[in-house]
Image: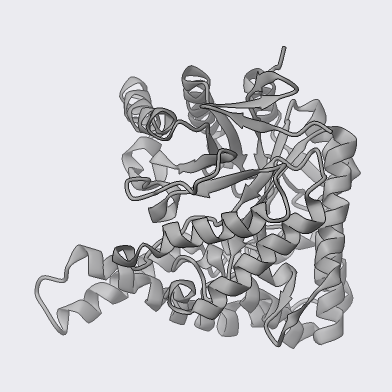
Length: 446
């Protein structure tokens, strides 16, 4: 049976180098507020739906969401677009019930079985990405962190839970040929560096996985939301690779300015990407960009496509594998999206009248600034940044109570229960120019 392998600084498949080009399937097995138009973390969104629909109907709602979001029609579309890799974020809660942690949820494995069957049928590789762990591995919403404190790093029991989960996942799927490998932990941040807990965690999971699976690659992300590899020490395992995230327009807002000089933007982006490309030489391992992308401005699609074109052109220049963020969402940064007439977009539209994640971040910034003035005239930038995450935890709760729940209650129950069907392929549209870019830049193997 053939598996993708690490050979020095390259990925190899069937005796030849291979490069990957694809998409992340974000906000599916781990929901993200801005992508779906629903405030709160994954856990809070689910709890709010349960308060409105009742527990049993909420469970049916989210099962329907998972089954409708990604179907065989989507895979046919992805295959025809040239995609050969899907990075699929998932929550530990897909398998673990916090109220009964000793017994796995079989439905979680059922969802994963279904996903792998479709990947195998359409010969698209899968990289499952653990996006959420108990307590949160970073302070932000996408790790389902409701407190803004990454408590995963402070409770040994949480780490042991995840080491065992990865081993059990690897045991079950060790013979799957279209499983590329395991992305152990999405965007870790704010762990106690001096204790070396991040490297120790990677080492421990790798040893556990290798006891049951020697076939698949283990992917290691960097610190600071997968961008800082300065303190990373790879496990003693030849079949490990690096995966980083590339969002230059998030960290330098000027790059999103349409009037900004395009040549200077590309130069700056190239400089940053070259640093990630150099990881291959530093570690002697291949590197894959697990996330890159931009918000899609529907009122100026040509400029959005220009930014994507520039990004993909740089990946091509540096010979890097990549998965863009993301395949499908509620009209934010996905290639595909539910049509305006669908129930989900009606719900998202109502909520977006009151809420956006950018507005939420601005509010946290303003409140934190005011709070800081009560104690000092010189609030340290690093401390302000750290505490903003904790403040956002308070905002999540307010938004859940005074935005999400009241808006949900405006809709009849039957209408809410049908909303997951909005994500079925036949109820979606997609950006033709975006798909053309995929076809232009997807790696064609000899």
